Image 1 (cartoon, one colour):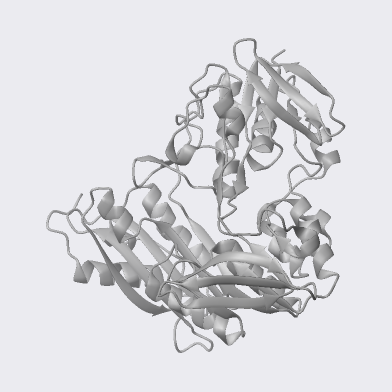
Image 2 (cartoon, rainbow, N blue to C red; image 1 turned 90 degrees about the vertical axis):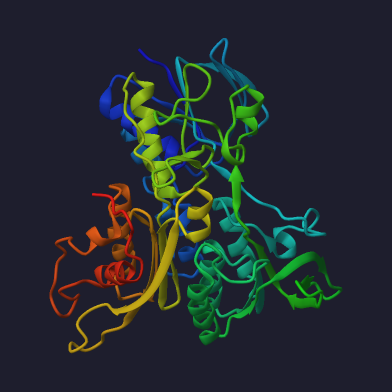
Length: 464
């Protein structure tokens, strides 16, 4: 019987284990889980904080009992501390400090990512008891809810990316006055600046204070037990705020210390280098999820794209191939979506700068189109930026912002599907999409935007 050992109990690790069981019910995967919360949705944390998901246990994709019933064995509160590829052993240490070695025939690494801790003075000595938080695990979530139980009045969030924006809404829902500080000159830096302005306006409508182009340099406790957060903007003007709670969410980086120590090759942004079968540089070891580099279908190259949806797919590939399969990871187009109060922002593929750096000849065009026929009540505009290659007409990317009821998340999926199949922009207008006046138009908003790009950027030599 194959001894399948998996390090990590989140999206990639669980998906690998479940796929292995599907293919061979005689295999009993053993998962090493660093905490006591396997298979929890990290993406769902803001909605527990907001109160929309009252019980944190509901964030579990599957309960511990469900996983055991599926044929998985789990060692909770246990850390993998060393990998010995030559002898095919992993050293683990339990919460009580006891260490021992586990043998394996095939190993899957799914250690995920860890939150970036920026160089903010005081961040190394202040923690949850002081009201200073990061947010990446269920343990972090419990610490934050403990602080919220003390009924803080004002919160400051460092970082205006996806988690920062979701948490601004969540804390606002809890009745806090929220301030966001972002080092870059716009909120949501993964979309173009003109679209990010729409998100900034939505934050302003909900009385969330936003400071962009501002770097936080220090956090300290006052004599009254509050927090003073200081920094400066790009012009050198000082920034200072006194709050009860500070949340630092400026991104993640791959957790690869274990892999590096074992001699595995690292790739993009020091993520574990894997091929499209999720094989690492060492025989008998696969890796998947936020700890690995990802094949980008548009770039036709590796990138670092830490996304939950990608981790699930990569884990499935790793689990199948660890049992002798030859499955390929199809790749990612970097599709993302976020809800910010009543707006939804989504993107997929490349923006101009990334496309130009990759050797394309990109151009983008911005269009506003109604989400359904204007004569039916309640029509709202969706702002769409389409990016294509002016030499060939190939679709390279899209960005959309619209009301939460305008199916923005599903409309970006149309572009993502077109990118997956390397379609031209003009070909998007030929898609046979559903239509009824309350929900769409004969040419959907995504097709209207594609048509406008083609009118303004007709390629010299379109690809057939």
